[in-house]
Image (spheres, rainbow, N blue to C red):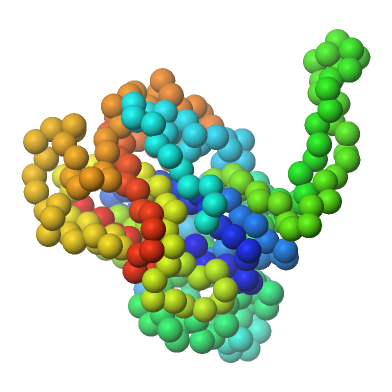
Length: 302
């Protein structure tokens, strides 16, 4: 769910990785580029079991691995082209806030718990009335820190002294563009308990202007690993009947946009910086969602 608490100018190049974890849990890694004139938070709905405690979600800091998805792309021999242009209740005790790189992250156990957030980082009540499927879900909320939305810093040529001491001198000369700069956000990652262990969930509903639209422009690259055979898919614009077939080999394409990584993960990705998000032996799959599609989440039946 590419869902923001305030209107944003543009979101593009969304990349999501998912895999089962510890039997009934799921790991999710999410990255995108954003162009915004104000502080915003991103809200991801999670199909957690009803009544989950506030510590049910484990946040994972991938600030040290901003090229996580760039390295993941290298696992696929064929080049991939990524898109580059696209109040409730009374106040209660504040929610726990986790410092996760460029974000302050919280788990919201239920919709009424949004009243415990700063109003700037909530969605209007009407949005939740328009999305009844989330009435008993939990939510991961990532608030972008101000530093993540600052204008880019110009780098100048290194001086002899900086080369001598192995340090790059950065001049704090800020650009002053007419429109806010587009920022690539380092991956957000976390582990959450799944309500349905036979499903792998991708949050792909779009809310960019505080309203729910029936269709949305998708610019998404989805990646996943499995610990059992794939049964079917429920992705926007996809007829699952076309891909409910057994796999003859890892080279089989199920549909025209599903591909299988053929290179060893440990040779192309930094396992230490990936912080346990990857399974070293499971194959990696890639599915592309692009164009105008039904505005809904994506689910793998596994």
